[in-house]
Amino acid sequence: MDNRKHNILFHTHTVSGIVISVVLYVIFFAGSFSFFRDEIINWERNQSTKVTDGIHFNINKALDSIQTNKTLYGRSVSIEKHSNERRLNVSLSASKDTLAAKETNGRDFFYLDTQDFSQHQYVSSYSLGEFLYRLHFLAQIKYPVGYYLAGFTAFFFLFAIITGVLVHWKKIVSNFYVFRPMAKLKALWTDAHTALGMIGLPFQFVYAVTGAFFMIKLLLVAPNVMVIYNGNQQELYKDLGYTPTDFSFHQTKNTEQVDYNKYLKNIQQQWPNFNITKVLIQNFGDTNEHITLEGHTNRNLKFNGFGKITYKTSTNEVVYEKKPTETTSYLESVKNILYRIHYGDYGGYLLKILSFILGLTSCFVIISGVMIWLVARDKKNVPEKRRRFNQRVVLIYLAICLSMYPITALSFIAVKVFAAQMSQSFIYSFYFIGWLIFTLFFITKKDIYFINKWTLKLGSYIGLCIPIVNGFTTGNWIWLTLQNQQYQLFFIDAFWICLSLTTLWVTAKLKK
Image (cartoon, rainbow, N blue to C red):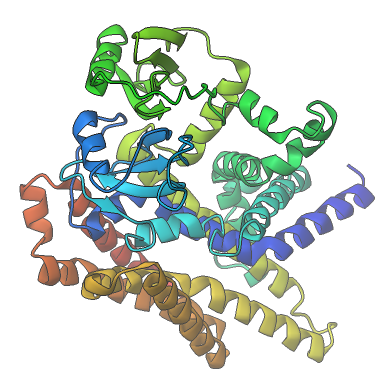
């Protein structure tokens, strides 16, 4: 590669990395904690549930409990399991019954507890785990702005990865083994950036591709909607598998009682090791009612074993069947694989912990890239005014990014101390206002070393207090949760102890 091409790629890599650095840091930091979303939610609610992929509870009782305060006739009822917690997602469509009152039979969404069948609304049951999960794709910003911002950030991150590899291609192996902690500051940051960037390269590439796919896929397929589908967006969704087949409503109530549990048992007998993750009942209570069961085989048996079957409940006739042993279509394979490798939920705690470490490593790669940019411009031939400006930019950048650690740790304490006031608005206010206060405080110090050291120290001290506060407020002391085999509750307390001790050790090694 000649010097001109090298310089173009180098500057493109630098500019694209600097432009997206703050947003990318937020995405990776929040995304790292999102690997433990289920554990955080269960820890908040003092609930420990069996780790399973499928739905295992009495569907008949669940539907009876829903009908105590809601009319289901003529509606589509969707029950889905997305995570390992006691609550399932329940979506109700508007009723097709022309005689139904519109104000009481419109769309609805809530969570259903699988043990006591209590119903919980989204806003009132909002959790810190859900907050961090949604923060990693900027869902708190008005839709669709946040989604597209996260998607294009992932896209430009992919661009930065490719240009970075091309820039370092000739020395990519030799530079990987080079680390000069006693050399000049720029050399130290460059070595750390290159070595850790190479270690996390496969991880970062996967998340750049999948992140862009999830957030901006609608923009990517928009030309297909106009050309192939003549602007019919619903037809595209149907082909992609996002919209179920619609069945006509007969406006005649089914007089026979339907045993929905029977269909779940049938599937478990026909397809051993199959996990049902979604139950969809269309035209509920009508003579043309249909029930669809979707799911997948155990990941250790088949990574992409998607299955789906639809019954007409009045005749028990199988209307559609796609066995998990059959060859999965290319489209379904791509969708499923991208989801699985993005969520990292197929390898247990070992994969989650490894993904968390690689996520934080990516955060360090982002910071080291910014520090290289600063040190490279902190030279005598650069005007003093510009040098001070560059220093202020990096100072603000570090204050914003590194303040995420202490405010995240403090939020874990807040959800325990103020459990009675917990809601979406409380978490939003506490996290974002606290983040702003930490950021402004560290900006006023005007010292990069101080920011590095005390964000880590504060986060560590607060993090070590989390298991203690949890024990005092709930009685779930870390040794008791381990003894009672409440492993999800134990994990979060143990996780914060390990993380806090690690960051305390890092602060002890920091030099001005």
